[in-house]
Image 1 (tube, one colour):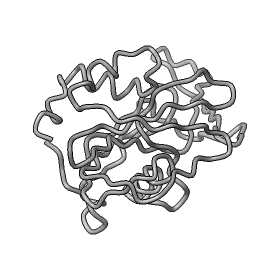
Image 2 (cartoon, rainbow, N blue to C red):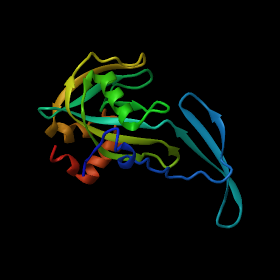
Image 3 (cartoon, helix red, strand yellow):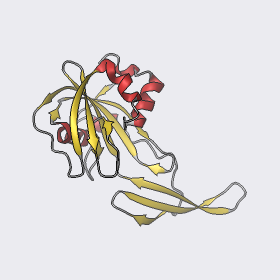
Image 4 (cartoon, helix red, strand yellow):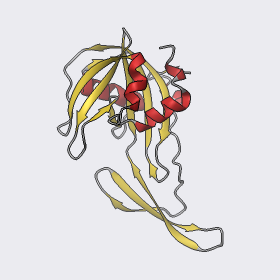
Length: 196
């Protein structure tokens, strides 16, 4: 069930999913780049021996399933340096100190020029067993164009609108980047979205 979310109830509704691999006692950052941190720690095995385990962490992200009042889905077609062209739902990195809802609103506006006052939490998940990276999915209903998009310098974005019933075809497209959404969609048959 979709949960309506706002600044007052966000902390109750949106809970960060734990990493699939918990870092052990004594975990230390051994390398840090612009996006990633590499962690190491001594891990005791079942036979009593110890080995070094590793994991990676990065900033959490948001992704928005944005719908206009007439049930059109906002999809971005993007090109970024080093990546092949891809389809994506609007979204991006949560800035330090920023809430999930605030990041979702900001990313939707920056990438599409659309805004909404009608937000719902869909799901959050960790995509990889060795990367501590939570991605939060929100639904924005009744989106309206309020500005021109202002993509980052490393993004070329065009926005296209699709009927909601085209979503199953879109998530099957090989260029669709949100693989965690596609997996969720097919595992749940998109049941949460049927009454949008």
